[in-house]
Image 1 (cartoon, rainbow, N blue to C red):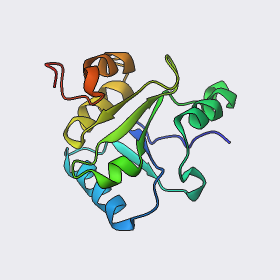
Image 2 (tube, rainbow, N blue to C red):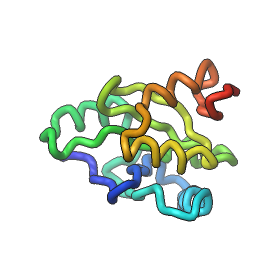
Image 3 (tube, rainbow, N blue to C red):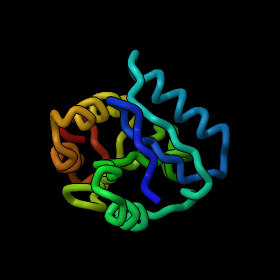
Length: 140
């Protein structure tokens, strides 16, 4: 079954950790407050509980080309526990399985640029550097 499609000009934020409902509410509220425009399509389906990056890559590879999405942002256990709620960005197209962390303040800009293909996933992932977390193009 293909991943759900995000709403137009938004990115798919997929919940994979179901241990704390309050944390999920906090993550969504933080992302919604990060910008005046919506940038996320939230999906909270138990079938994605604990799903791995490799499983998502395989699921997308098996989907019909028209049903595929380019990237997904995971609200995983690390997202839920970290006070900054950094999402895990996952490339599903150019370098399937490549990841980096996205702190909430950076999510709107990354989502907007990726959704209109203004920038590529690799540009943000390369800027994440050794930390694995994107903190702008000036580095950590």
